[in-house]
Length: 270
Image 1 (cartoon, rainbow, N blue to C red):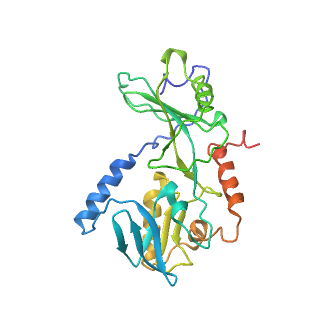
Image 2 (cartoon, one colour):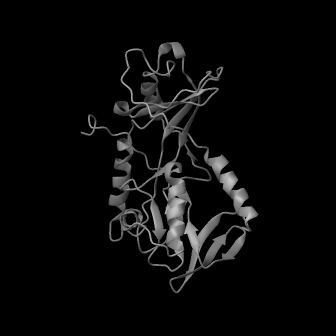
Image 3 (tube, one colour):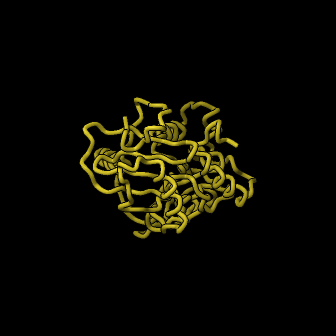
C-alpha cells in the first residue's frame, strides 16, 4: 500500500483504514467564519496578560489594549505557561520535533496511508506532491516558542533524520528539501488541560490539546461552562488544577520523558 516508503523485507504492518489527516488552518478558518456569522467579534492581537480583580476575571490585556471580559479561556497551546501566573502549575511544555519535506514528485494515483515504525520512533506520510518524515528518536528538547511554533534547528536533528531516512527504500531517493523544528506541547501525563481554573472565577483552560482531540475537548469545555453534567472520571483526568502542589521542575522532566514514549510499544517499553 506504500511501496515507496516501506522496504520489501519490512512487511509486518497494522493498517487503520480510517486513519487520516486534518488541516488545522482549514478547520480554524471554517470555525472563525461560523463564529463571525453568529455575532462573534474576532480581534487579532497579542495577549500579554490575563487580568483579574479579587480572584475574578476582569479581562485580558493585549497589544490592541484592554478587553473586558467576565470569562476567559486560555487556548494558547505552547504559549500557555507564559500567560499563567496562577497558584497552580500549568505544565504545558513546548518540545522540539524534527520533520522534513522531500523533493516534489508526481502525486501517487492513490494517496498512501501513514507509515509508522514504532520501534524506531519514526513516521512518514504522503503529502501528495511530496513525502514527509519525522522522528521522536532523539533526546527530548524543551524549547520556548517565539512568534511561531517553528523553532531553531538543533544540530543533532540532522543525525536523527539521517537515521530515519535509512528506513526508506533507496529507490525512493528521499532527501530533505526542507527541514524544520515543529514545536508542540507535552504534559506530564500526556493529557490536555481542559476545564475550570479553580483559583480564579471565570477562568477556563483548553491547553496542550492536539488536533486529534480538539473537537471533543471543545465540546467538553462548553458543557462545563454551561454547568451541564459531565463524566466525572474525564473531568478529573483533564482538570487543569490536577498538578497543584507539584514541583514545576519535576513536572517538566516528566513531560519531556514522555516525548520518547509517544510511539511506545510492548517490545520497546523497557
